[in-house]
Amino acid sequence: MQAISKAHAWLINGLKTLSCLIVFLIFVLIVMDVLLPLVGLQPWEGTLGVVEYGLLWFTILAAPWLARIKGHVFIDAVAEFLSPGARKVTSKLAYLVVIIGSLMLAWFSLELAIESYVDEAIDERSIELELWWIYAPMPIGFLLVAIEFIRFLLGFDDMFGSRTDVKEGM
Image 1 (cartoon, rainbow, N blue to C red):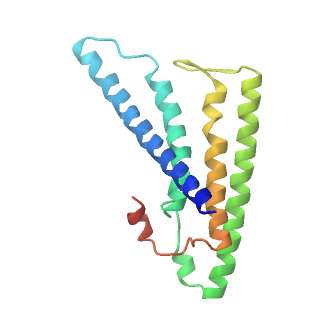
Image 2 (cartoon, rainbow, N blue to C red):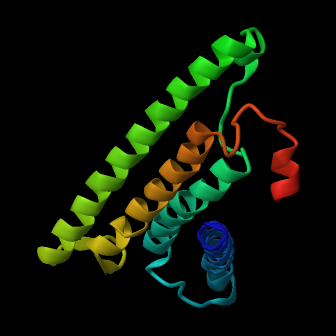
């Protein structure tokens, strides 16, 4: 079980690192797109499309890590007014809603990826890209988010724990 936990943590951190790399590449592309015309060179026509894809990819790939470190959007003002018993019940309900939603999104995005692969669908923007590439990270990211909230549901961690975990996770 410890090996699975380590592999899972390694995967989440690897996807976080990939997300960081994507953000850096987006930054480089945008800077080049702005600076190249200033020196009389034509910028790459595919910048806009790649930046759009990159924004989607880095968001979904970083989501499991954000759930792990409790860095996701979270409103705990209501939880502060609940008794410990009511907080436990409402948190379990919230975990179930997120798990079900994430698994549904993982399933539907997997179906979209497979369908677009089989149909050889192409996304035509400033560049042509096979459509399944756009959907590919979604099932992975949503499944891993569901796993993180399953950890909360089973009591391995708590969403209402110390919010200082966010600082330590970074």
